[in-house]
Every structure is written in structure tokens, then in C-alpha cells.
Image 1 (cartoon, rainbow, N blue to C red):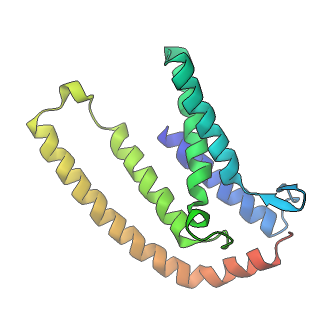
Image 2 (cartoon, rainbow, N blue to C red):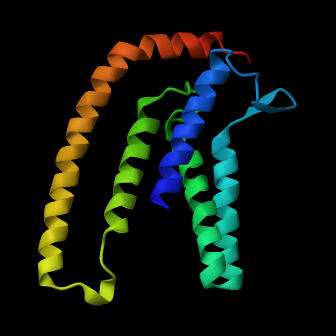
Image 3 (cartoon, rainbow, N blue to C red):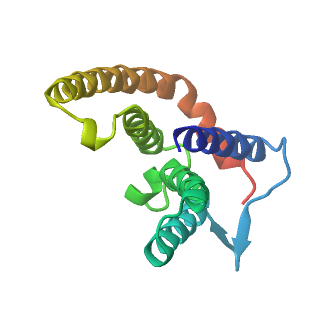
Length: 165
């Protein structure tokens, strides 16, 4: 899931940037003049994954496909997290990057977590240390992202303003 989540996020950001800089044709979906953002596709994929699990139950072979659908939907949805908070806001909102970083970090922690039945006291201590390390990493990443936003933000907002609508 982590790999699919990160790959989907990166591919989505790269595609949007290439479309906005007119290096790729406009692939955005418009219905009746309304731009349908990719977070909507993410919500649909999350709903499909939830529905499959709810109505059919997990099966070994199907569970990998459902996990892939879920990871793609999660990435598409959280890539535009800033729009959840600021409807009508621009695509390059800092909240979206921060949300993807947090979700990706939590998925990474969960990927290496032992099964609950094997968890003991030593695992709890390790989990606390990992969460502390994750918090420190998050703080450093937050600071680095702020510096990157100050440097690259104006150019990204200019590209967005000039993008086809």
C-alpha cells in the first residue's frame, strides 16, 4: 500500500504540473464547465474498496487488489487535502503536501509494525521511540517544506494562474 500510495501521489503531482505548464495536453475532466478534481476519483475508489470489503469480505487474492484500489484512492484524495479545508483554493496548497506526508509516514510505520498478537512491552517502547522519531522527522520536514514553499510557491501559483481552465 505504501508503495502504491507514494507512486500515485508522485505521478499525480507530475502529471498536473506537466498539464499546467502545457507540456501535456489538458487531461482535466470538465462536466458542464465544472472541473472535476482528482480527489473525487479518490473518494470513488475509497468507496469501492470499502464496499467490496463490506459486502464480500476479505479474500486473499482479492485483498491485494482492494488494497491497491484503496492506496490509489487515498493518495488521490489526500493530494488535494488543502481543498477540503479551503474550498476554491489553489492546487498547490501546503496543507495537501503536509497531509500526504503524514499519511505516508503513518503507512510506513504500519508497514513495519509486527502483527498485534506478537506485540509485547518491548514493542510498545519501540513504538513510542518510532513515534517520537516520526514527530521529529515531521517537524524537520515541515520546516523544509516551508522553505521550499517560500522559494517555489510563487512560481507554482503563477503556473496555476496561467493554466488552462
